[in-house]
Image 1 (cartoon, rainbow, N blue to C red):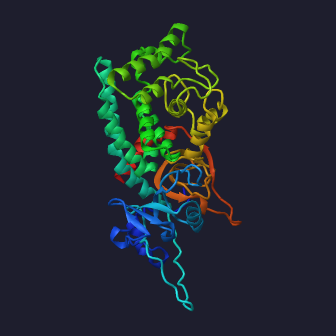
Image 2: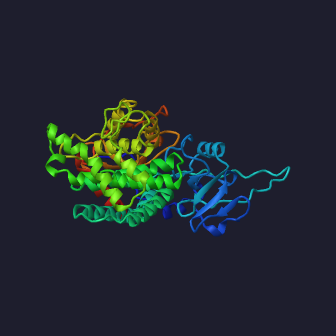
Image 3: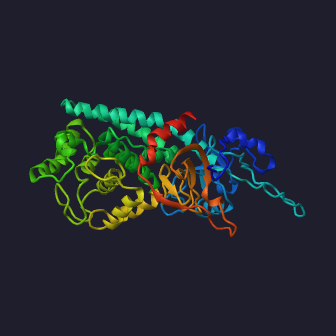
Length: 451
């Protein structure tokens, strides 16, 4: 009989309140904070606080400095350990706290301790990985409408181009602004959605995912909101010119002929034509037009070398290749995240901008949230959360047993599953493609939203 790694418990946030003093879960409210020099209310769910007021159980949604250069590879994380608290205090003076996702009450006022008084020890907080599952679910519930509206607007623009009509640039810019706000408030959820692949509508989903990744990257690197918006717009529109390329060429499973390559090489010019005609900014037009240029000068349409292409164009080139490799396409083999990042790394300085590749790989981390993996125990799981101090031992949701048969979902933290010597008992063996063993992230995400 199959025995899962952990009991098949589906504990929710509310159920933790029953565990007594081990875990304090007074849900964080704005009213609990003394808005003084230690904190400032930004909106209904966000408060800026001094790092001195933080403690485990607080959800940090933004830093007071760019994420690049800090140990925190993904924007938005739940403080769980003293080491994470130490790192936040080392790198930041203030952070932004999400009140809805925080699990404990924050004391904004520092406590006064008398000369001979004894400070009461803080209770030990133990976080189940099911907390990460709940956070993922809540984030997706809020992010999915924005994602759906944006992809609907983009498909409408594609149809307009097919019918020789103008694209509504202001409408699309407004939608990207909304999408960027969602990225800023919940980067992990938007990154998760970039992993949800459709095997029927690759073209439009691909552009949407490139756009999401571009905005997540911009936020990760501390770019301005205007730069992030330009990157998001360029990600949506970079392949617009392919509407002029016959579908039998785009989906051809074998090598292309010289005349067919001519069609492919012309699509950036058609994209520039549509974007100029519709009144997009020159930054978006230039990024879309030059996204196939390469540092070694072998790209197209102008064979630019080095840094001659705009930075956003060089970024779109990386994201285009990455998302294409991890997606199902009838004419190419699907790769895992590891295989795709290895291709990017090997292409540094020749096909891809080296600095941007390094930053992108640092951003997505070893095992991105939403990745399907096989464990050394034989079970199959989905990555649902990270351990910042143990990136190779993430939090997972097991959905296939060691014989690859469906089982009731079990959440687990690989960092806490140890053998008699205190060493990890279970590790990740392989990354898997979307669709492996009948697991599709689109379907798993739907189930996550309703269960």
